[in-house]
Amino acid sequence: MKRLVYLGLIMLAGPTFNTFAQESDSTGMPGDNFDLQGALNLFKESKNLEDFEKKLNSESNHVNNLDLNGDNKIDYIRVIDKKEGNSHAILLQIPVNKKESQDIAAIAIEKKSDKEAQLQIIGNESIYGEETIMEPIDEKEIKKSSGPATLSAPVIVFVNVWYWPCVQYIYDPFYDPWYSPYYWGYYPSWWNPWPPVYYHVYYQRMYYYHGWCQYTPYYHVPHARAIYASNHSNSNTVRKRYESQRAAYRGRSSYNNESANGSKGRVESGKTQPATGRAGTEIKKEPVRPATANPQRQTTKREVPRPIREGENNRGTIRENNNGNTRTVEPARRTPTTTPQPRPVERPQRIERQPRPVERSPQRVNPQPQWQTQPARQAPVNRPVVRPGNGGGRGR
Image (cartoon, rainbow, N blue to C red):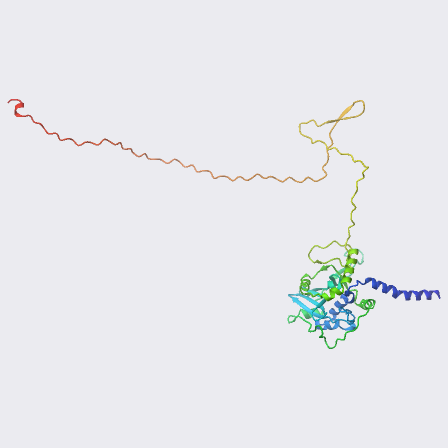
């Protein structure tokens, strides 16, 4: 009888503890009412983006539990594809009023190679308190190469989503990017909004979708994420309505030195990543307490030996006892504690050789004859011949 009573008490207390654990998992943000793993599971099962939008807004799938404008009715989520090259950013967006829209999340997809694609789903900061990144994973047991047939720890393998029907659809050569035709006040005829449910009820419904995705702080599809960053939409109405919840979320995150959803910041792949311990946890360094000096403790000043020089008597004397006997000792040589740095090699400056002057043989100079000027000859003066007269000559 006592066993039946104890069993009944355990069965009654079980749901209470489960509800308490679920409430503690709540972040208080509106993102608690839109499960990213559930949305990614619906995307995996959809044949195209139109089918995906219909599954998001179907009550039977239980993924959408958002009421951002507070009218006690589930909001309609439309799907918009932004494409650049081989990268896609599929926006999940709610028209809040005639002028404003609020992004809930974005599925970022990149084609890595032929028949290989990778994706991540990124939760909007205004909805989740910070950008929350999730991606599908696959855990495989790998056997060791040597020794007995034992299994090592599971290895996380990223999933190739190329063969998902919706991925094949958006990478078709004739694909035209999907843009939902619905907006505020205009919705499909099959849609009938329903009232939202409490978080603990919603959490139990979402448990079916969990177990195949993980949180990550890294952007493995950075180009697709950049497309989303340049095309995202945030509503001022939503921001003002959930301002207190956002402040409380950030206060808890800063107090715990981590995000409430387990992520540790956002890092693009290829860049320097923070040191981590176990998967998804970051190594925390304990602060080092500065050492305080003891005022009563006296420190002994160490004497530095004098450097040894060549040709100098460096022997010292130490007194053995009071009798005055002394002995010579070599001075202590202290071993350097730091590795000596190599001295820079001084290379002699290169002296450019001056060109040697060409010695030319002296040229032979033929002396020019110097002509001496002679005085000019005077023309002879014609003197008259004086002939003697008859009287003056010899007599005959």
